[in-house]
Image (tube, rainbow, N blue to C red; front, side, top):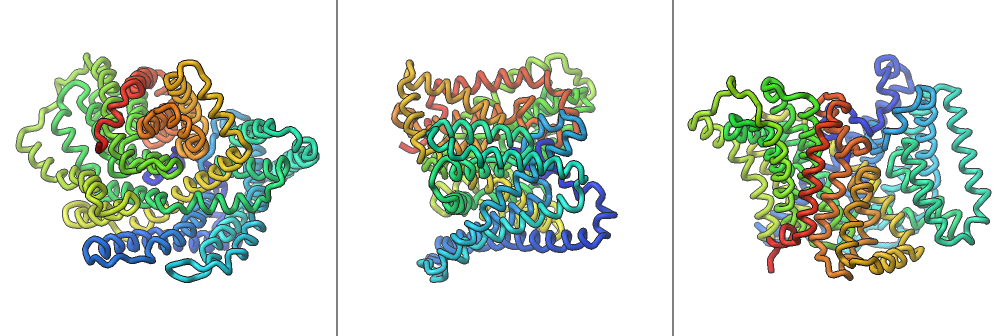
Amino acid sequence: MSEAVATAGAAPGVATPPWREDGGSVRRSLLGRLEAGLGGAVEAIAALLVAVEIALLFSGIVARYVLHQPLVWSDELSSILFLWLAMLGTAVALRRGAHMRMTAFVSGASPGTQAILDLVAVAASAAFLVALLHPSIETTMDEAPVVTPALEISGSWRLAAIPVGLGLMLVFTGFQVVRHARPAATVAALVLAGLAVAAMTGLGPVMRPLGNINLVIFFVGLVAATVFAGVPIGFAFGLATIAYLELATRVPVAVVVGRMGEGMSHIVLLAVPLFVFLGALIEMNGMARAMVRFLASLIGHVRGGLSYVLLAAIYLVSGIAGSKAADMAAVAPVLFPEMRERGAKPGELVALLSASGAMSETIPPSLVLITIGTVTAVSIADLFTGGLLPGVVLALAMAVVVYIRSRNDDLSGVRRATRGEILRSLGIAFPVLALPLVIRVAVVEGVATATEVSTIGIVYAAVVGFLFFTRVSWRQVYAALVATASLSGAILLIIGTATAMAWALTQSGFSRELAAAMEALPGGALSFMAISIVAFIVLGSLLEGIPAVVLFGPLLFPIARDLHIHEVHYAIVVILSMGIGLFAPPFGVGYYTACAIAGINPNLGMRPIVGYLVALTIGLAVVAAVPWFSIGLLAR
């Protein structure tokens, strides 16, 4: 995923809002002040909701485990507020240009074509918002008589978040088009979008009798066309689902609203914003830097030592942050300057950083682990345990490449750290090294759920950071809360629209046909696993990890169970496959995120990363062939 919590600017693959380009003159205008005022208010409310969720979940842990007086209403209130956080976060993400999109094809076009495609993307997004706005209002009103069991309030208070979020996104889209688009490009984009809608509408009566051929037209053709045109992935999924329901079925579009609400507000997914904020916190207060410096004092003096440090640091930080961009942004600035001084080439640096992101995809509490557990009903605690050893296997495979490439390094100017320096750095880094253990023990011992445990990490990091590390200002905390809401909104919109799409695919009977075809493959489980690896490498490259998981997880996991493949083992193989696709150029968005964080031209890493990708593929084959790496540590 192109996660951007810790990055200073938008990574490639993430849209940059046009109103950022001429900030001074625009903000002096009346329209600019209106946009700034509304946007600032939405960001403030979204940041407050993140903080309230942290306080609410941590209070639940204290009340249940310490006071033995469970708060019976806390989960219900958390779920209500979570949907509001998700929808306001999507609006913040749209305003900031943080919704995930593929720009590989758009960026290769001429400036004039790019302008038109950008507006086509805006028009497509607006069409999705307009199509859902009225059904979402009706659905919210229908929920008014329903009373929640614990708080005894109307269910419409929860669902009202959807029309409010859609309306805010529509307003921000209007600001974008009215204030900054060139008239000619606007007309061309609207004409193209209008022709497409008219063509699809006119063909409606013809499409309905086509049956499941419509799945290819809408969920392959339309999704591919919109994604490659630069439409944000979440909007592309939603638009394709709405078009399919409207033109090929008799199912009301309101179903999409319900499925989005369910997909975006599942209580387990509340771990997404909380772990993202935890990653931002440990990066801000210097805890991550302390850990990296300790590892460097241990093995930084050997050939390739700092490369090994980077691999180890990404492995350990992934267990804390759960966000790949936060992981890379916490480690790269600490190590890259000295690695450059030792003669490391920029292309090698970004290749290693990107490949390490793929290597650590299964390290808990990975957001993809949480997501795949949520949509497939696999135990998240088991996934947290099962992801540890496969990460080690891939790290060792990459370490072999580092060893081969660093045999001729000149270390004549490198000083080995003394025992005293190592002990001092260990003393400083010990609280950081203990954080993954604290998180793990809290889950295993039943102190907190996988959702709640992030709040223990946040409180731990806040207290330890305040006492022993850099004190973080309230301005920094607020910025991190807003960035957390933005990234979470971008992720959760994809989950919501992909959930609706997956439902449509299931209702069409496609899942049954897919299961029958996969089970009939010669070779049984072996063929199914091999095809899954190839498919999810491609999906990881084109759709990124979370959308692919939400869309195809519910379809493929039942097949894996029927073929007697352990669900945890299959989940780990799927995630590692997607990770390779996500961080592999030329399409992998994760690769360009690594380049943005490192400040290195993407072209420089294309060749060096090949060796690491080969090593990762070999490591993946080993993990797939030996289930023990994934399930050997699970409780019997």
